[in-house]
Amino acid sequence: MEKGLGVISFLAERPEGASVSEIAKALDLPPSGVHRLLKELETLGYTRQSREHGDYMLTLKLATNGLAFLARTGIPDLSQPILDRLAQSTKELIRMALFDGEELVWVGVSQGATSGLRYDPDAEHGQIVHLASASGGQAWLSGLSDDEAVASVMRQGLERPGGSGVSAPKGVAELLQIVQTARAQGYAQNTSSFMLGMAAIAVLIRHPDTDEPIGTVSIAGPSARATPDLLHSFLPELRQASKDLAEASLAGRSFTRWYDETMGRRLTQSRTGERRERS
Image 1: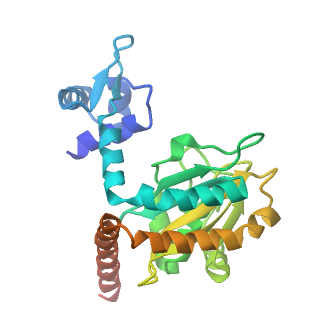
Image 2: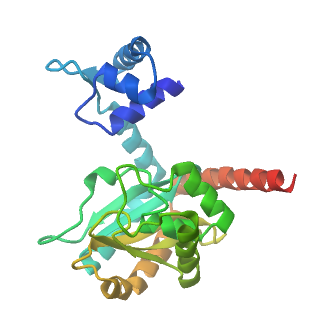
C-alpha cells in the first residue's frame, strides 16, 4: 500500500504523466515492481497509460473522490462565501488552509484580482503548505510552541521543494525569530519568502470554543502591488474573515466531526511527545 500511494503521490505532481523508469528512479523501487503497481492501479481505475508515449498518468478518479469527500465535510459551502467576500474587498488572492492531523493543506481559494498583475497558483490548491516559507505556514507555526514549530519544519524540510524566495529562513535561528515575531503580533507577513516577487499576510483560524488553531487564512499578491503597508491595511478584514470561518466551522456537522477527529489525533501526538521528553 505504501508503495502504491507513493506512486500516486508522484503522479499527482505530474499531470502530463511519467514513465515507469522515471517513477522507479524517483521512488527507489525496481521498475518491474512499479510496472505491476501501475497495472493494478490501472485495473482499479486510478491510472491510465498514454498511447502516444507509453507514460502513466492519473485519471480523474482520485480527484473525484477527493472533491466528493471535501464536499461532504461541508467545508466549501461554509467557507467559500467568506473567502469570496475578502477577495472582492482586497482584490488579491485569498487562501484557506486546514490542518488534517499531519499537514497543513490549502483547501479553499478565491481570486480577487481581475486584471493586471496577479498571483494565481492554481497548482497549489489542495497542496501541502510549506511551513517555513509560506505566510500561512509561518502563521500556523506561531500557534505552536517553539519546539513543536521546529520539529514540524524539520519533518517537512526547511527548504521548499523547487526552491523558496530570497527571504525564506535559512536556518533554525532565523525560523524561530520569524515564528516568535508572528506569535507576538498575531499574524505572519513576508515578501519573496514562499516565492520571489510574491508578498502575503496570514492569520490563524482558531476554534471558537477551544481556541485551538484549526487552520489559516491568507492574502497574497505580487509584491509590486501588495506592499507591506497595503497588506497590513487588510489586517482587520483578514482577522474578521478568520473569525467568520471559525464560526462557520461549527455550522456544518460533518465539518465539526472531521475537525474533532483531526484535533483529537493532534492532541494525542502532542501528549505522546511530551511523555517521551519527560522520560
